[in-house]
Length: 598
Image (cartoon, rainbow, N blue to C red; front, side, top):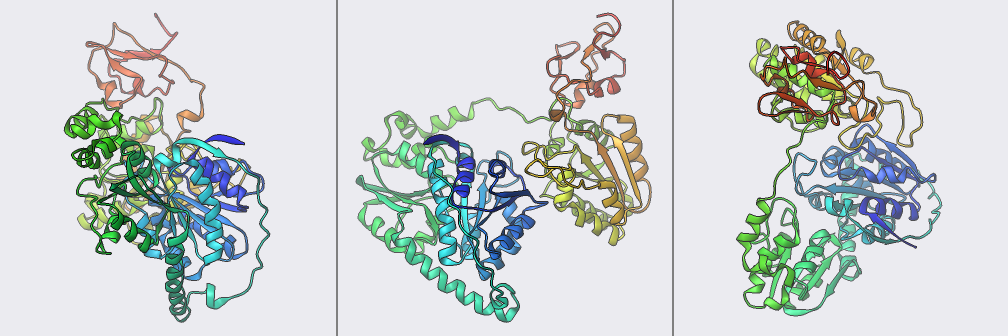
């Protein structure tokens, strides 16, 4: 039976069919749907781990214990999990272990565009790159077999387009893989320096075996066409090449580390001109050039942002069209003939600025922070939009959990008086991910800083996944609920306040109090995410007779509020009754619908 699946769902299906027993992750776009889909298979234990490091460690324990396991995360999550990953490459596995890295070219929901194929090369582990949902499923299943055959973790690298694009997938049945025996082997799994030296030699021996495998695996294949032009590509970039340049010969690499050196050499020598088309870094190109082979890549193909068939047509395609126009797709030939015009047309598309949702509980906190003109060390979450106009109330955002360390560093650099103007802001899920150690550092090293935990009761940015503070597991079963107040006090914070995020007066009072006292303090601004509770508390309207046209309400940045030229207008469809606009209107011109004269 065939089914139309996005790549992430195909990956979950492939893992299930391959007999996976344990899967762990921290939600992060574009990887989130993998665990959500696996949670629908009762044979698989799934969990939302507090962070990606823990997720990979759970998968490592399961694999060493004899069960096929999977850890899934977005590309920056591998940074968090890199510590155990590098040592896992030394220890190897018992049962198969697959690490999914979902990279995000184009920064659709990320703070950088890193290319995680380099992690595979750094760790000396295989990297597989599927080009559609069927390949995602097939490569997932193969990855478990390779992991066990070569005693290594295997990286399966997706990108946003592969993770979230649909294509047909042939479904199969689950293969029940028996648990492998657990054998006590300290020399293999306890990485003392003496044991590590021995295991490093094993890694090198394994790399040579994998390189030999790369030469013969059907994951790497040549699709011969016109031999005047050859293109080496992988992943979704392969699809763009096939669409833009249907007449050229293609070497499609499904195993992108280690590379098949002989296969590549033979292909380059068999074509007159060879190009390398890949997203982001010249990962393939640099290694191919190191073989002293003449290829052209990043001097044409952009090194930033995601690719498309149009970009391939107006870069490589424009070169090819100069001497072999018949090799370029007729539909994309205009882009190849006039690349500048194609780029200009794409740039003219209107943009849509990101905004917090109507009724977002974070909006009022950032409104107060801007009003008080504080320096705000921010963090990763939908509340990062507090940095955008009109709020513009965030000064830094580095990575998950960094708000506390950045705030601490600012204080230590500029002194205690400056610290009274600095606050750290972090979400509840992010605090549990990697904020607790930063708060401990503030206590231990004598900070006078204030941390605001924006507790909306979910991991909102990635689609409302549960975390240890929600009281539910990834399988939607009840679980012990982490108490943020108790955690803060257990870490040594003496001053902890809880306020309603919708109460601007209470929020401002708490911030003024905590930034004026000595010692670290925590404010928990609590309100459920507006998207979790669809029922409106009220709908507000503008009293046209009283509206001054001052535009103060627009400083909230609420999508439900607009201006008709002279007065404010509230969209009743978008308004969900948070009441913030009433609190900021100096003329008391906003009221609940149904109260007073309509």
